[in-house]
Structures are given as structure tokens and as C-alpha cells.
Image 1 (cartoon, rainbow over the protein chains, first blue to last red):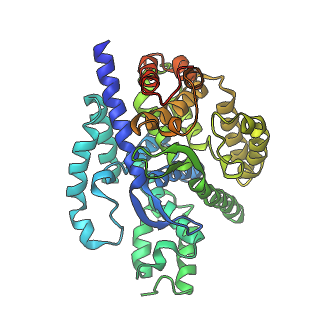
Image 2 (image 1 turned 135 degrees about the horizontal axis):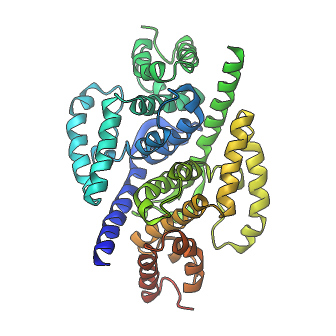
Image 3 (image 1 turned 180 degrees about the vertical axis):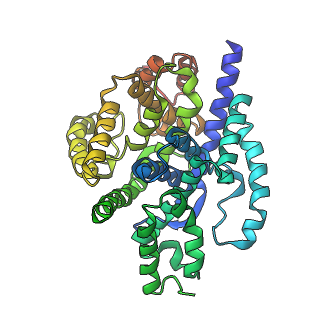
Length: 199
Length: 199
């Protein structure tokens, strides 16, 4: 009984620590432009995107693992913060900061779950399996959705050109080719209005 | 091609509408007590609880369906608002308000997905299948976790007695009997400090 209670106590400590993800702000505003989105609600939105757009992805992929991966993929930001996708200086130190965060945060769990969550997160970061490719594609698609419906969102406040945005969105082309024409159309619309520079 | 684009346009309209769940506030504060939690970040936290505490639930249940159910379970609140668990007047009109919300919100989707999401939500509300029982149990456990770690949270600001809280938490006893002693211990701790009344 003591062992069961110790294990549960570790799991509860981890679940309480995870609450802090609700305080990590991203650059993307909500669609109503009232405030910046946080990484916890972003993660929930990813899950919904995954379920709704699953038909455009590889039919053989395991959507259950995608949902698990999307749930845990941003937990390292509790320590490492959200690194803006176009912040080249921040990206240089991102891997190191996030490895240290993963060491600390996943270690709150019992060792079997620590190892499983760590592997899920590493799989997401490595972009190699069909599940990781789809999870990364939806992680690009969701902010595009927010930006497209809020007059440009984080594109408006950062000086970006078409090639930068298309490169950032490229995982969508690989993982959901049927969705790609709609993505290019959105980018071109915001190029036409000058929110994204042509070159 | 036009049909594919129309279907995708409906899916995108639904995913953009879903963003509004980030603006629906619950009574439960974040653990750092900085603000109230919203229903989108709450939903994400449920998924994490489900994945971490799965071992305490019926081994035969389909966790994938639980994750889908937890992702969609609060979408009706976009129109119907969050009804506080102990608000007896609000609960009288809750079902009607939420049915109307489900009609409108799920109808943004293509009809096959509209029907699937509606069934998932109805399954959650009916508390009958093992998946729905577990999803409801984690939907009770997550605010208990928040309250336990924030000095009482929503218990502090509402005049509740032990029997009311225990009744509200009862789905945890059924779906995760191994977690129940820890739940009772938390409730008793907050009874001892006077946050929850004994009678």
C-alpha cells in the first residue's frame, strides 16, 4: 500500500507541476486578439486539430500516439519557455534548455512513466516517425489557423517574408498534402495585403 | 477538388470557432492562484491526467476514445458557458442549453464528423460506458488537484460541506478505486482546516 501511495504521490506532484504550462505565453494571439495564447490551451487545440484533420494524414499512423505526443510535447516549456519559431538566437540554445527541462520535469514521474514521456517528447522533436511528422504538422497548422483568423496574428508583429513562413509550414506539405494548397492560399493572401513581405 | 476544399473549409471553420473555448472561465483557479482556469487549458490537463492515471482504471477501456472524449467534452460551453458544479439553479437549465450548443457547434463540421463528435459528447454526458466513467472521473479529479494545491481553490470561495464534495467526487471511487483513499484524505484535510464544512 505504501508503494502504491508513493507512486500516486509522484504522479500527483507531476500533474500539479504541469499546471504551470498554463502560464507560458506564446507569440500567437487568440483569434479575438484579446490576449496571447498559452501553451496549455495551444496543446488542447492541437489535439482537436489532430482528431479533425486525421483523414489528410498517413492512414497507417497511430493517432493514439499522436494524441499522447501532442499532450506532452510542450511540457519542457515550463522551464525552457516558448522559443519563438523565428527567433534565431533563441533557437541556438533551445535544445540545451529543453533537455535540462525534460530531465527535471519528467523525473517527477515514476521511472517507467518518466522514460515513456521522455521518449514521446524525443520522438516529437526528431520529426522522423509518421506520428511525429503529423504532430509537428498540426503544431504548425494551429498557429496558421489563429493568424489567418485574426488578421495576421504573430505575422503582423514580426517582420517576415514569404519564404520564411513557407519554410516554417513545410511539415504540413509532407504530412497532410491535401491541406497544403489551403495553407499556400492563406500565406499568399497575407502577402497580398503586405502583412507578410514577398521577399 | 471543390468537394475536398468545401469539406476542409468546414473543418477549418469549426477549428477556428473552437478557439473561443479559451475564453470560457471556470470557477477553479490555477494552482498559483493568479487567475481562473479556462475550459481549453482544463481540457488539456484532463488528457494529461488520463494518460498518467490510466493504470488505476478498468484495464479493458479504450484510452484513445477517452482522449477524444476529453478533447471535445467542453466545446458546448462556448455557447452554454461553464455551469459551476454546485450551482443548483444553473444545473436545471444546463442540459437544454448544452443541447442547443451542441446542435450549433458540431454542425459546423461535415455531417460524418458532426455525428461522431455529437455521439462522443453524449457518451461523456451519459456516464455509462467504462470510457465515459473514466473521463468523468478525471473531470472531477483535475479540479480536486487544483484545489488541493492552491489552499482550497474553488472550495474556499463557496460554502460547501463534506457530503457535497464527496458526492461530487464519487465517480472517482467507481472508475479509479485505487485513487479514492487519496481523494478522501484531501477532502478531510480541508475539512480539518475549515475550508470545507463538516456538515
